[in-house]
Length: 361
Image (cartoon, rainbow, N blue to C red):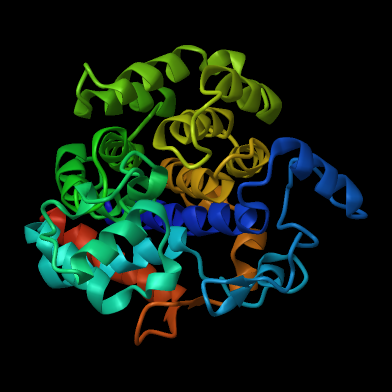
């Protein structure tokens, strides 16, 4: 892969991830009926949403200490608001810049203690951070008083490892496993491994449907995650819209948490399939599927951005950010989007063993 292609796809992946998250954030975890009713109650709001929502259900509700629901809306967005789907990706950048491919689970734990406010962590991440602060070893912090080891949290943290190892899923999976192991096990861990492999593959993929099958090679074949993702891939051609996707998941996993890794991974796969020729359709349909729809749309945007490149993403999805990403990390108020892209790019070029000075970027 040449430099310009990599840069184009990396920019697409990062912006795609952030745009998918920002689209879903104001309606995160709304039940599908509530979601449709809300959209119908807003004059001029299309559904599925083809642009950022015109209004937020809770416009003044605080999000991650420094943001509000209204900051994600079409007419009031002036920066990229904070969200864990965004911030964990940026945290992976900081970790990779310091430790590179030598990153360990202990290193991840140290970064969590240094940068993550407790009030901005949830489910397994919050339990794990509490355990670490109580002196529990990072090697077992995921297993102490934790009933949420198979939730989606690890899968939203690992995109950066695919970004810096384009076309090298084995390396991406290795780093993702190191990160995910701090807080997750079983399907929670497997989900992180799967999507890191898929993001890496997306950079060089000629057929993203085939790449979604190929990414399963990095998951234990006797696992629950493998079995259910194989099912999701087998029925993907039947999933022609968000409503069918929601029904399939609800019927197959009626008792499963809305933030579990498996049901949301199925929705993510279908969102990627629906958007393989149309980035906007991918994140739009995924948000409309409900469940943990800012997380799923973020991953869909990441994969499609890496697959299709930045030229496939309309500028309406990122110009409102004015190149600024608001942060809740301790000691870091904001990031510059262009700077983030270039820093990931530098790491990726180094891993590709190519001299960076030959790049036109």
